[in-house]
Length: 92
Image 1 (tube, rainbow, N blue to C red):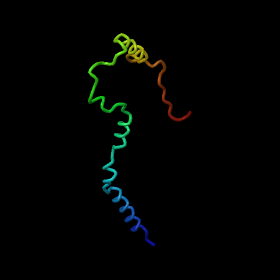
Image 2: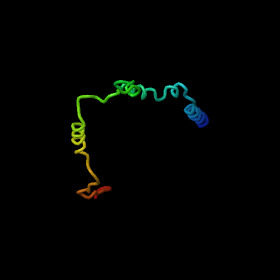
Image 3: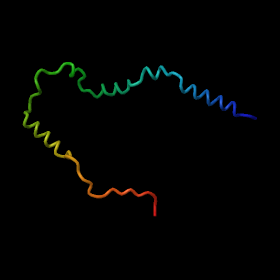
Image 4: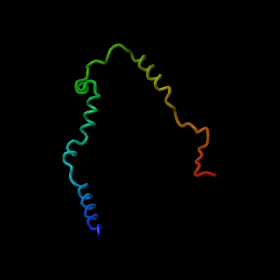
């Protein structure tokens, strides 16, 4: 029994079906990401209606000190590698 022709037809049918238009999936594409981003926003209208005055309770020197503490762990410039990098391929 020759099954090459029916197999080729079945493979071609599946390949063509894979290229079919998916309007239901395309219409909803990206909405889950937008929903997740909106769920993480504390006050969604804050950007469109900002406060006229800055928040009270702190001063510039205190905030600058806080930034300095956070930035002290950030590496500055390029650092040299202390040990050479060795790539071993295979076993001896």
